[in-house]
Length: 446
Ligand SMILES: Nc1nc2c(ncn2[C@@H]2O[C@H](COP(=O)(O)OP(=O)(O)OP(=O)(O)O)[C@@H](O)[C@H]2O)c(=O)[nH]1
Ligand SMILES: [Mg+2]
Image 1 (cartoon, helix red, strand yellow):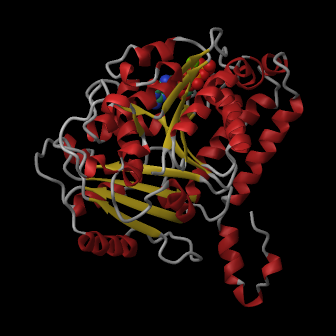
Image 2: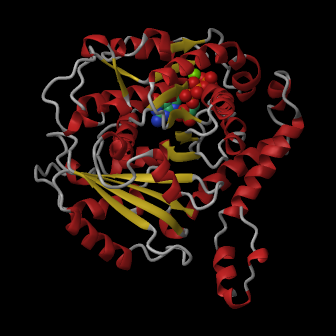
Image 3: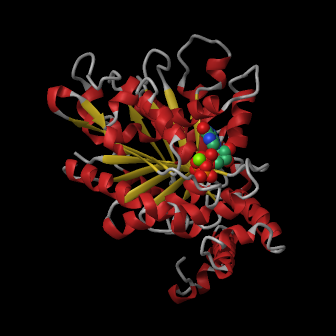
């Protein structure tokens, strides 16, 4: 088995994780006491990837929940699924981070990192052949930002060959707290690694989806947003959890989606949303699913994929669907819609079909994952928010009081600025235009 351990960090990360586990437990017919209901079939074949089967056939999630304050952890423990998790895999501090990255990374975080790493090591020992970790968090939080960076460093030191798939909520255009740009900036350095892929989400885009596609009558709540995130996470991980043909491990997925180590920021969309909201109790066709999944308005972060180069993509479908039909529709879509692909990777969108559906609620669904240079828009926005405060040294004293150096802020800024250059793919196209004169030494790999 190729096990995955999930690590939930901070309020947002814990709630994302809770929703994810509720959804996949339903998909795999695991009840809140950990017992499997129903027959052994496709749904149980790869159950060991996310669950550890213990005595009395109980399936225990390979999950660890952590926060610098008790509230979010208590709420997961008190939820209907709370009893399914190992009690020792809930780790919390008492003082919180006061929204400061520096406390999460330098002062409060180190107080609980040993307890977290003890739980991680125990989970790793329970696995036969661990493939990697899955982190969920918001990069703008003091904990989701600072503590998650500390955790990623520790994982890199102790388990350097393991893949890490990160589900990150990025700050919105109007930040939930003013310090979010400072808290988010260091993430770009800490997440740069060959073995890390970042799935970018943002609450603006998710709210729009709730209003426009799901037709929510009231202002969407975090609960609504988290439900959408969980659907996408379930779609993105279904090929690891169920038998299928493509991307059956994080390693395969990352290898195909990330051409250069630092181009590791991916986006996603999920279908059907509008189709379901329209109250049509028909099973969506492959065409319906493609129409929604490839629509740039349905991407779960605020970047318009039509405005950038499509570097790599993968569409993962679930339900009773013929592979031939998917291949046919995909080649039509590539010709008609995906015309902004980079010229230097041929056939850069893959498809996979998993015949096990999510259940009666959704007999067919599709998740589109994409690596597009339009992610620049979001990174650029965070940098602008960061520099407009940093130029004036606003709020800096809070971070310096926790032991941070002003130079670190300058480094974070210049790292983001480099990243923006890396994602400026026009220059790559130009290199290829001059291909006749091109020598390998001309091109420095990023
Ligand atoms: N989608 C979603 N976003 C959330 C949720 N809770 C918080 N956020 C967003 O996450 C960001 C702040 O992160 P939090 O998770 O609250 O902070 P934290 O990681 O606990 O860090 P602290 O600052 O120490 O509390 C803001 O952008 C919030 O809008 C949630 O349940 N769902
Ligand atoms: Mg918090």
